[in-house]
Amino acid sequence: MAAERAPWLVLGGGIAGVTCAEQLALQFTEDDVFLLTAAPLIKAATNVRQVSRTLEEFNVEEQASSTLERQHPNIKVISSAVRELKAEEQRVITEDGRHYTYDRLCLCAGARPKLIVDGNPYVLGIRDTDSAKTFQSHLAKARRVVVVGNGGIALELVYEIEGCEVIWAVKDKSIGNTFFDAGAAEFLIPQLRSDKPETPLACKRRKYTTESSAEREESRLGSALGPDWHEGMNLKAAQEFSRCVHIEMECEVQRILLGDEFRQLNVLAHCVPHGNAAENSAASGTVEWPVYVELTNGKVYGCDFIISATGVVPNIEPFLPGNNFEIGEDGGLKVDDHMRTSVPNVYAAGDICTAAWTPSPLWQQMRLWTQARQMGWYAAKSMAADHLGEKIEMDFCFELFAHVTKFFNYKVILLGKYNAQGLGLDYELMLRFTKGLEYIKVVMQNGRMVGAVLIGETDLEETFENLILNQMDLSAYGEDLLDPNIDIEDYFD
Ligand code: FAD
Image (cartoon, rainbow, N blue to C red; front, side, top):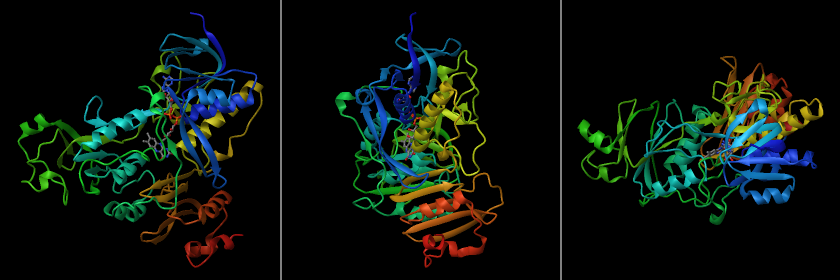
């Protein structure tokens, strides 16, 4: 079959793919840059704001592909999923049978939710706009949901869902341990017990804009939602009360039983302590539910549906047959320090890839917006450098892990080894904690700051970022570092 030639081919219309295509289009204005994507809409980072040297904020907008093509006339967006990669021939084949040959290809196909079970209609994952809408329609009628998982999505959901009971099954000893430790979790938990403020607190996160319905089509491979995905979305179920979250700590889902299967067991389901669902006013356990979750701690809860927020699996399957990709332990395509996969002329960026280079001691990969954008941008730079026979240094953004987000309506900033990841026992923690206001933790190693968690409006991000990057010996300052009566910025000027 005749193939169209694409000197630069980027696959995936999420933040990694779009950033990569934009960067290539700017650098090679005479060349066509092809962006192949399974979803009808693409994601664009707009209004990028540099908060500090390594922290950045941006809006994420879902746009029609024509908007990108207007901004970059040499980008051609092709809406079709890729079903096959013949890397030896430098060719991709789309699901609708079109062939494209490339000089250099960047795979940015993202990842999908890792569900606790596949194919169960009562188990939902949230990834893209369509799955978020499915969730919303289920929630509208729900009396009780079970949320499984302990990452960012689970944290957001348990805080945002209103008007129905939430049972949160957490496998760890504390909530949110992907992002912070038990101390920070204790700081945040009271927020789950209180009503949400009417208006959001000062910290505003990136905007997530949905498209007009006319532009939306069904797609099974939409790009990932991101920050503030629930804004503008009604996450209120039918009942009158606001929040009711019950946490089951250190347990996983043992099995899921449909209503009939559960009834055959002839046992009583558990009630939610202080819950609001009808069963608590009736005799214990007599309310019937469409589905039941048995936890490894032996408890069985009935619910209307289950949200599985238990991580993601990179979308690599269509690209594997016949190609010699090295795969990381987390299932991503391994990339080197120039975002090159193990297959010649094929690069990868964003959620699909596994960073397989020796990282800076203060950086780790996490599948987040910021890293998708940084990797997409850097992959384009590397593709260009390889094409031109130039050498480039690893970008500065990979020096220090830096992430700004919002949990339970608090601004949360994570820097470096914020959770002492990989430090063994050789580290110290310093804490400053003001109930309801701020939680500050710094991780120190050999007198140097190597990580920090800042929750609330602490205004310390820039100072701490500099201290971490400079690796200054801070032993002499001791606990003054976190003394609220000392203006630490002046201290280090
Ligand atoms: P994606 O955005 O998933 O894009 C992948 C693209 O590839 C899509 O356009 C898809 O259509 C296309 N594609 C897939 N397969 C094919 C194929 N075979 N052929 C052609 N095209 C294909 N991150 C944060 O930093 N902060 C947050 O608060 C945050 N919250 C999140 C909340 C939710 C609910 C979710 C799901 C994610 C969240 N994330 C958050 C993570 C963040 O959204 C992702 O890390 C980021 O979007 C990854 O971008 P990507 O471009 O690599 O992949």
